Image 1 (cartoon, helix red, strand yellow):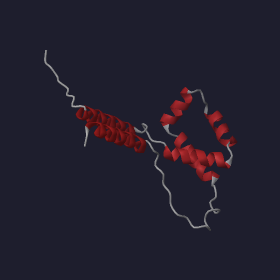
Image 2: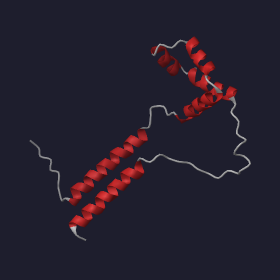
Image 3: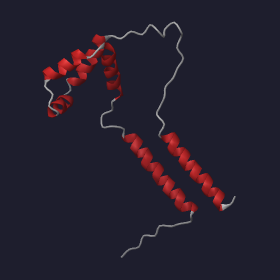
Image 4: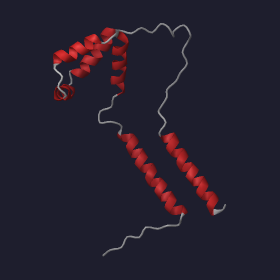
Length: 131
């Protein structure tokens, strides 16, 4: 193969890695048609899940730093309707302590590999000299 063709193919592969690396995970499955309308929202269960998270010392400290009192928090929770409470409880399950560090490591590794691939294709070298 010629050098320009190798460059084009390598850049396309690098671009494809980035595109596929940033797509969100999707989980799909089959469900019977009888069960689609049978899901109900249990407000008490969702409220217990939210209150359990709010009882955490770290969450309480953060809310106090933001200026919310316990009375205000309870008032806001009581004003939520069933769908909002259910959505909040679902989103609490998706929270990760410390954020998504794995994705950052993967992106850094992909950037390093892309840089090394670019250096290899262009026949560049890195020389470290002692002074």
